[in-house]
Image 1 (cartoon, rainbow, N blue to C red):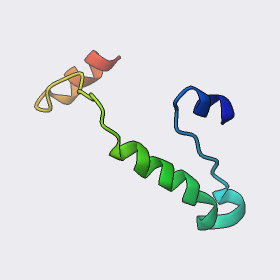
Image 2: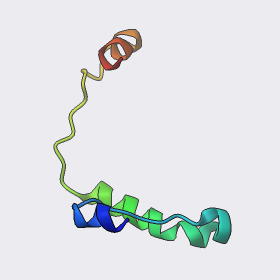
Image 3: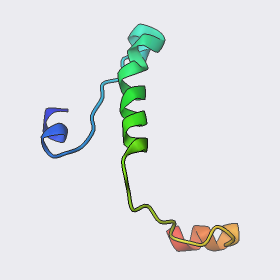
Image 4: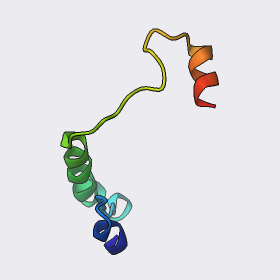
Length: 59
């Protein structure tokens, strides 16, 4: 976690298996933060591309 944060990555510890929902709050907050960051995401294909072609492009 420390190394990830030092290199600019978001990091969260999820202890949902131990604490139930309360153990996943840190992870949920990190996901929200990541989703709100500006990004340059682009699909590898047009959204109208047939499924088989999408798989070929990705694989």
